[in-house]
Amino acid sequence: MTPILLSLLAGILLGLLLLRKPLVLKFSNRLFSLSVYMLLFLLGVSVGRNKEVMSNLGKIGYEALVIAVASIAGSVLLSTLLYHRLFRKPPSHEK
Image (cartoon, rainbow, N blue to C red; front, side, top):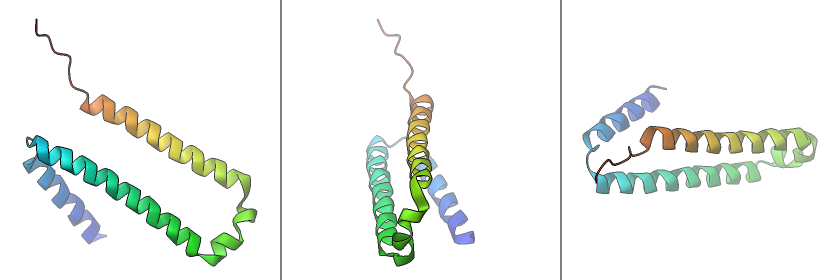
């Protein structure tokens, strides 16, 4: 648990240091998205390789699928709303 928290703290500190560098911010956003996609892909590979999970997939049933899809959809929706709320650029008052 300590390495996870130290990694998070190091990332926060690095993010604060690079806050005003637009090129770094653009690159980090793309890298973050790529990392999320890679983690989801590896999770899928892990599930697909697990014979016990795959053999019981029919028993898990419709409810598990609905819960999973709803969780993913809710996470995407809420994170998108939160992102736009926190990182929205204020309207310009130039004339």
